[in-house]
Image (cartoon, rainbow, N blue to C red; front, side, top):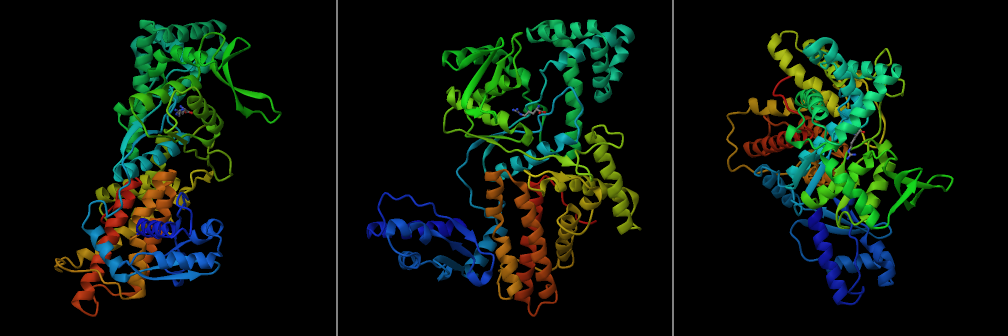
Length: 581
Ligand code: ARG
């Protein structure tokens, strides 16, 4: 509906251009917003205010000229000027009902499909040297939900799990693996089942023994220059480590597969070329033996130039180097229109620098949009980064196990008579959903406080609240399964029906915003409001005890569309619905 209003305004502008009220080459940015207060109609635009300069008239005069030039339209029942020169649009109830009927009969809920793009999404991307910990939750969960929404809109999405599998720490890990093998033979495989412990033990050896450290440094160099023995050790290590990640993805219901893994190491062969190409473009400088790029746009607070380090003095490449190679690959081989990076905000400067450099060095076309979708930190109750009691990092598997246990207690307390199997099944969904939803529902750019109590509450904008709301709506049909809805129509008579209908009609706009901005919290907030609008409707408008058959069927259809929208919305967040809880 919003895009429909926009197209009406485009037509009005064309008329005003013909009449030479505004210059023919004037490009107006037409913004249409939902109104907060329904006495101002359903949509409003500030277009008239934007045109006062070029039209050399006051805003209310311009608004009137626009209104006079709008084409006749059956979907708009009234257009008014408000305040200093806003134009308010009132949507015809019948047109709204038609839109809702169309949504009911469409797999994609009647959303307006944008022009399809190829979108590469870089998310999760953990460093393989360690086990996945809470710090990886945000990228994984937020990225996966935006991926789902992009696909729902018809885009071609290419997932890229840019795992850190190539840093200097690998020398240390390989040296330790080698040492353990020498001591215990094949048994050392067992040690790797706990990557965290393995990493810490390797670090201890690295710090205590100069000999070990030297061996570790030597192994990295051999690994990076393709030595077969080192590569074999490395592959074994990565394989075990990736298995850990994929266990977590499966548990979380995240859509990443092994085929989506394209780690830093895969760009190894292109890194020397990156250096050559930067050099050819005259972009490289030397700094203490290292090869670096200075860009005028980046300076320290003191005004000192801030380099991107491309190659260290010892010949080693860096994080930025593989990111440059990855950008070329994504642009030229994968043919991306957009590349989205779901990575911690603390890497903001890194991305600004490499994005700028990739364009400057002509590695990628200017039309390709590189977007860092940064996120804040997950903190504990004390407002400091989330840690275990003993101060260690919290492993994701442990966090999810605790969510399961707590969810089981919660579901059991609500359903003391339910049999154990069903309780466990429901608790699994509630536990995982709560963790995911807590993360998704916060603006990704802010830090947030992780709290099991809050996320497992049935009150407020939480997963249990929404899952329960869904079971309630779905429950209405269980009690009405004998009603034949063929040929029935939605009619919006009661105020609460109109409010619910208006909310339902916004789904496509919300998905669109979520995809453009990479912000699932917009969808969470919407689903929460939708559940609220349904409750108010259900309180005010009896469904099964409606005044007549037509009204009953209309209300059942509204309930059906609400259920469908909630289910689809939760699905885009990567959350399964339950029929009962
Ligand atoms: N492995 C990195 C980390 O854990 C994140 C990688 C993000 N993606 C990228 N293309 N740099 O910090």
